[in-house]
Length: 300
Image 1: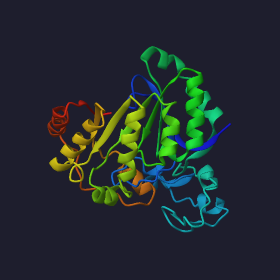
Image 2 (image 1 turned 180 degrees about the vertical axis):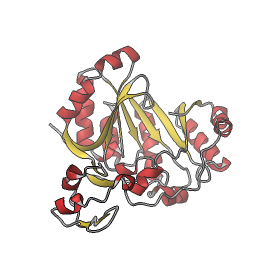
Image 3 (image 1 turned 135 degrees about the vertical axis):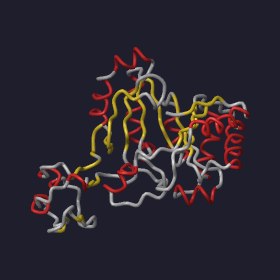
């Protein structure tokens, strides 16, 4: 029985592959995209989150903390992350639910029981399970265990990945994955490194290799104005995808729904000035990809 760390199991998901799906979000990601709408997914292991607007200043969290990680006489409280062990004692006593532990260690058996609750929806809609994150390839043994169990039950599987992993890991899961949702964020390595935190070389090379051995890959492109929507990058991206015999592209317009999460984590949101692109603008970008013979879907 494999174990891993997740931060959510989302039921009735319709944006992570065909049909109705259960999406399992695994914790941990080697990327740090400026626009990430799941920043709580990046750190592996449990993480303490503070909802400042909920705090009533009762001080119960300070009294309950066994590590003295919550500084007294502050509303909202100040948390010393170097001392915090994410034991959850503060969250358990908070009467206003202003503190929350994100992420928990679970077994593959636990996850499969949750997945099996929705079997009727998969059968009726042609859906299944999606493994997302974070980056699911960061927990390869846990992911492989879940994929194998899904195969035994004839459940359609999707892996949503950035492709930033050792090729051995990606190739090992390819034979037990029905559909890959594979991100391309930028073709320019310098820009990619600056805005995503890692080079794109492994990502693109892994995609080339994967396209040779797997025939069901859907490219996902987060469209972020001012970062990857210039015509040079759009054309280079479309040309690259078409050159490796992949046809399906999903353009994901930038949205601002994750901004509040950064405040709860005490982090800066790097693209606060970016605005959501118009429908007409996104459609014009889509037409460029169509011009390269690609099939384009806009939105999740």
